Image 1: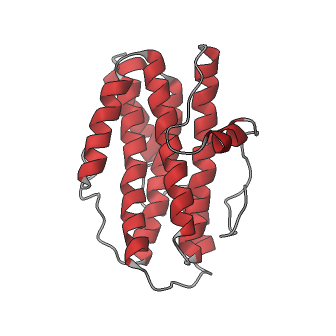
Image 2: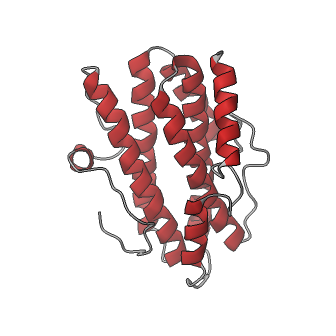
Length: 223
């Protein structure tokens, strides 16, 4: 089957199972909403608002790059993680709704972003990932590296527990995703070098097990 048709078929499955539905579409999103219902909505600083807008599109960046590179290389890891990135987008959508923010994702068009820096990054990463099989895997690891770096920084910059809880869960996912990409790279004889987080932080993540279990409800969770 043509790879583009395969991607369309995967997107249909993701929609039917709730992975690309609205905020209440997936089990993860439902659990997240239930947790946040008991958390007070606090005031939002300018920095916190900017962080929410950034992460809403950064999660879309991850999903769009992964699906695009799947079309190029047929690497199953990309479609698996793209589904998780869709749930991350939904989680950020919950926060957008809670704080009545104007969603930067005007129409969920593949590879189109409101933030010009995000648009440029998408174009760059797709070009890099199109160069070779291993380059595509390095791009995947790079995106998760960036996610972890940004999320850890944004957690430090917010006092709002609901925002922290969502960010903590996105961090958990990104740690698992970078482990998955690094595992494939290692099998191909390639070592991923940290580009955003410190070498020490990367080593700690890669030398630890995949994180399972329930949705994190503690805003001050420590990995």
